[in-house]
Image (cartoon, rainbow, N blue to C red; front, side, top):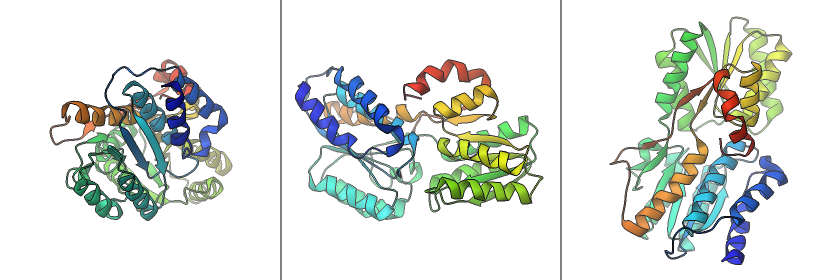
Length: 327
């Protein structure tokens, strides 16, 4: 079992983004290797295919949760990712060709994924969507969706900005065409009493992101809040703020160790946590429950993992979890 498990995990980690680094990969391997299956069900194979690009620690956390659940559930777990929608669809089709027992997939750009999920449904492979695409999940034949409602999360941000007395906010979108990102900014606009401007940036290049935010802050001194839509971009926004000599508060969606540290030292105002570890863990667990016992959660509605507003008061309690890569 130990040899087989190590082999399966080495395959799954081959698609890991580079951001976690060798240390993070080694830590995940060690943690998983110490685990033991808690069940004696068949060793099913589940594939998770996400829209992650290289350099996003958020997806390392999702993957970590999925791997831990896979160990417990005696699952051979395969992970792959591509931030190009057509390439992601091809990865889904490849998993179908391998006759996997279950698929977990994100729907950041749902139109590109529709035919691949229809093919999975025709092949009798159960699908759970995760993180993005909650509105399309049921239509595309998925058992359920695990994640946060992005519009509701955006609304929570707008309300928090109101409480902080902000008047001019910039919502930074780092992936054009991602429906979840647009929904987040829509939600902010819905509840925020001030003005919201959208700033589209090239999220694959942090220098480009920094220069775009810095230029915006230099040309518009009225901006008093910058909201990034992913944890890795928060630190870049802080650098842009410093370069522009701006006093705008930097807030962000998602949480990682750097964000927790920024909250603790006051560099960041607040973060919106959607619990990515839980998204990966529950997606694998729910597929296992369906295969084992025909269980389905959600009753036709998404299983929500967020949003939760995290501030300086919460940072210390979460620091250890972010350092180990589970929050």
